[in-house]
Image: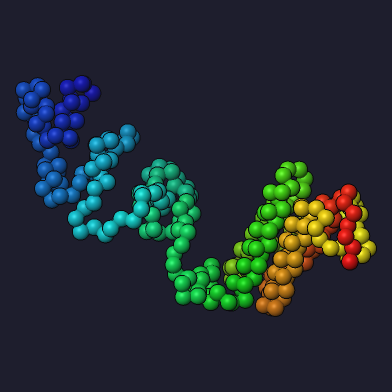
Length: 282
């Protein structure tokens, strides 16, 4: 394509031929679509005429202006995945490489979840697969206990600061999140299975072999990591009681077994963390 032809095309798109007339002396027919858009007050598409190169900077600025009659925009523009079936970029699944612009608060997606929806001000919350439930529902209570246990383990993991113990605690936290997924979606197949229970048993056997377990009752607090693990263990026990009270033994059998044995592992890990300290015995 010649340079003159390129200049003509650019002038038609951007200035309706006026600029090219001044620079070359030749009149160029204006783009009817451009005049129609200007007259109607609708801003021109930022990407018009620039396939493969993206929008011009001036076009982007123009596109940010609000069209009269449009609903108010909330927050800054963010990206939202496009449906891959309507994408021309060769995508086969989400997230799509081509993205649509939306504004914060319009919709919830994985890339930009809202922190507060204010829908829970009435004492209800949303549970996947079960709609709106009261916040004192037993399933919600169990999810809260498991989430609290994971948070307590997170404190212990931060204090452990590296090594095998930190990796194991992180593994347990991920297990708890999978259990939460099972509890939150009662109509779906359970993600936690026999292999998860066996993995907890392996950790229990491995750490018990290298830990001196006192025969008396132990008063927690001989070491910081040990105390944090004992604290997390008690929350795990509470989650187990909540699960039994809710009658989830049949619905989530492997999850309940994993929770029960996890508290045993945490007791052993706490005694191992105490290590050289003389335990305070009850």
